[in-house]
Image (cartoon, rainbow, N blue to C red):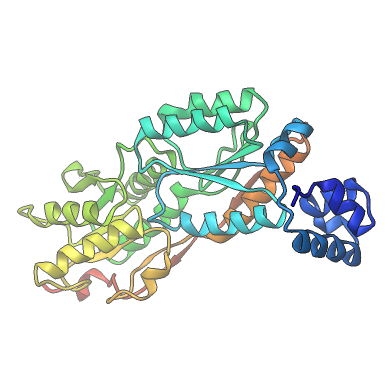
Length: 340
């Protein structure tokens, strides 16, 4: 049997080849009855569209690149929501996860450039690779940043105020009577949103006239093992902080594991707070106090913004800041409720 072409599908469906193309790329603009007839013929003929050839003929890619540092945090929610939007619009994704490795991240960016993607959703990147992202933009490939805000730039973003989110959590913990609050954060990661969370921690201390004690700060990228190791290091101090704030829920879960392993209690020996409000945070024992982040909404709005920029080359930058809020649960308690 000869290979079925788009011309064959159009003839059997009684429509033009342009209508078949719209049925595959922009189905929402095709009348429902016509769309169903075209799709029915495609199924009956076992027609498989050659997307690469289609992109080449239009001289425009339909592939979206997604750059991610790690899927262990709530960014996975953003990715899922972004993928739903892209799928509805017939845009396949290439997802690259660097695991906080700047060399691997740079390699992924080069590969996206070589593939001539239509646009890139940047869900975190290292400062060292900003030049590679600028190269994509200079070649007419739009980029939208998620999980951070860049209001003083011409970049498009759908993000949160990481500094203010962390400030709110630390300020709350200080209001609960804690004067020494340990901090576990990837300070040396080169990731803007993480560094801004550290800035929020410092700002809250300054606003409450508390000193910055570097002896109770640990730099750790967001893994369970790193959170556990950092907490063990803090607990080994002669005078450990009785309250520890973590820059992610993943780090906080690791920190809680260290406390439990030592036969101690959260929060009555050590209060622990996280950031991200992952689904897991509500099912831990005790449940985790954290900063609520609208991960799914960021992913959905971010992909919608990117596809708008892909479709309209001269569209102005799209900049949206979404709110965060505190979720106070059982992993923290007032200082005077702890064991003395």
